[in-house]
Image 1: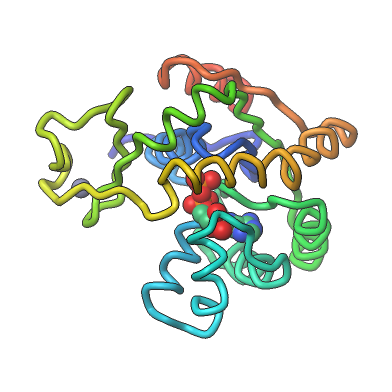
Image 2: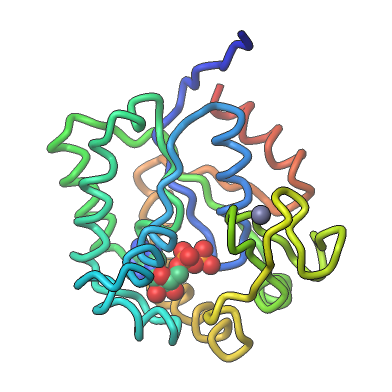
Length: 221
Ligand code: ADP
Ligand code: ZN
């Protein structure tokens, strides 16, 4: 049986603009350390697909690139971090996205006697973000992420991993991409200072994925 190393710093937030690569790095981390990946975007898309009450509330906001209400997402995260698979550690990917959400997260962590170890800020310039966002393709079956520019599949439109069909998320159009970046600048970017002030911030510059993984592992192990 192969050894899976335990992390010294294991409860993490991934902070960064849409398109910064949070999901991609998170998936690499999960494969390497078997910690839990908590993507509020994925959870919300699941709720929309199932047409639950929260899903119905979130749907239109998500299509237009706006944030769904803080209390709604925070409640989902509060329940999720209590699950047994989070004991080895977790990555919050795409949460918190507002100062209010960060405060609600602190309450939820305190309640469960948990602590944040690090906030990883993925830093990427705006131009790169826009081109990445509008070139992104996801697999319908296995959720693998591709990019027409930087990470194309071997066969156009087909997933390398599982042969599933690739599609573009409705919120990856140019107009929505722009408004998502604006939302990030206005509502989420203040969290960079917030976490810098409390000493938790670790800035990870954009680069080839193996380089980013090496830097991150060195900080966490
Ligand atoms: P990306 O990974 O590209 O940043 P996500 O998949 O995380 O995008 O999120 C997609 C959409 O889901 C967001 O544009 C927003 O409408 C909603 N969403 C996800 N996470 C949150 C959150 N923490 N707070 C509010 N809305 C959220
Ligand atoms: Zn696939």
